Image (cartoon, helix red, strand yellow):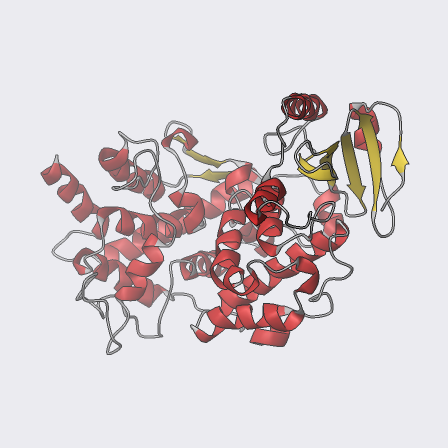
Length: 451
């Protein structure tokens, strides 16, 4: 356990606090409120007290320090600690989990240890709070995967008794279901969880520390699928008869027109779209690199969004859910729709669609994300420099020194690149016309018929 340092805390002192090496440093604010500072830079609030129900001294995590929406600041931590003290004065345990466990054991049962062994169930609940405060968009998915495949094997077990073999057995479950990428992600999330437990000194060492996901699931094959111009034209020609919904067809077109990630478009709101300035502004929380991304809207992108606005402009989202109020479409909606239409002779999902071959292309299966690779490759063919392409796709610069020193935003160059891509997409649409109408024109007619 780290050394405890006295004096009431100040925000400046907290911000400057550091710890080197193993374990942590404890900063005491007084009246039971403490802050543990780990070498990783994580700072977590704890509350130390004597349980009025068991008479045992306990020290429980309250939350991660932070002055943003996802953290707990000094003033808020003191308010919570004051609330805990009121509960204790009323004879209540502010963290009743072990107290409930003790009561279920019945009278005469042996008293639990001062804090009892930390069980995996409880550790996962605490890790969820920690992870989701840092990865608000992907954190919940990671926790769901752990609950699905790992919790059934580790439920009720102390974290100190969980070994590598047990965790590997859980990771193998999605691997055997054919979800190789999901298994690799689950392995990485578990490795992060047990590193976090090690930093907190809940375990002596991380059982996965010296291993990588590739040791279990093998090296991931680098995907290189993209659509050549002839395939892109075939796709645009097939969309009207594909059975895809209005939103799904526009979603594919918008990926080609903007190069945005499907998840970013799915969660975009109409307030992010400025038709007058021809701009789509994706907030930092929504993008993968966590930086604001401003996308210039070419003429074809404006045309797609105008058609979509007639259908969904009444809602907050570009792609609102038809089932859940005030929510976007479900994650993976478009990927499943596209995959179902490329099954060919494979067993199809008859209840979802009978058009199991309509979107098959000459060079094999493709996914909506492959359209981003199509945008990058097409821009390169049109003479756009790689540096500009990477910025249009909102990829983070891998070279740290370049990232720090080159602060130019390349707005004029990106605007030109998006317009070039838009012009190429318009050419593809012209060559994909059937009876004089391209897919967008057909969607415009469909929209007017619905209206």
